[in-house]
Length: 275
Image (cartoon, rainbow, N blue to C red):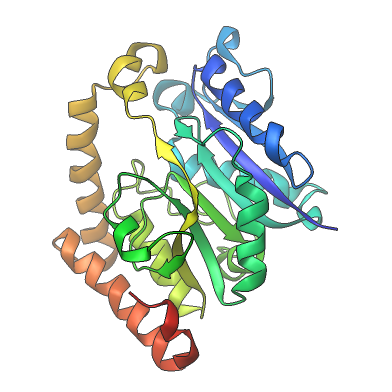
């Protein structure tokens, strides 16, 4: 029986990363293998679960961020002999908080069995407004989902794979959008174009520990929270303009929403899951 490959991205926070890995293993060890990508971490700050330590000059200086980091882990599995072992991938950063005792991966795997058109699924946050739209113990399809914890069906990745010789810059996400602003809209739009839905579920929850960036930026070796946010938006808008000709976040999101609406034209039976 195939399993889920969980990829965790770390940069110089071994204690926090180890705690997250152990939380997943405590509830879902039967359902997943875990791989930790070290994005230019210091040799003294590696997770004890480290799988790949990326140490080229650019990564040591700036890290990988979500898009390049997940691309890197997926690429290593794809190039090796492990790709065939998995039917899904759970892509999380080390600032993801999962409730104690929650069988996150087992539940997400069951959701994929129940919804064969579902390609990307995210646990809801208890702080998201989407929670009220979805209702308890339920699921709805969306055209925008914050991407700190994506559960992705293998077929989706294989359909979106960039060519026969992909790199960690383009395997699934566009690594040219370094900080990732609007990258979730792009990947969700591509999923809908290829007849796969993207959903948020309240059957499992995940939170983002924002204090890591605010309180531990010196250890992580990154910019301040405020500067990160400024560059996140500025660089992302520049990327969207160059790649798509879009001049605002809303144009990118409208593009994703258009693909969302088209999906239901082709699969009207899925309207029950529409918001």
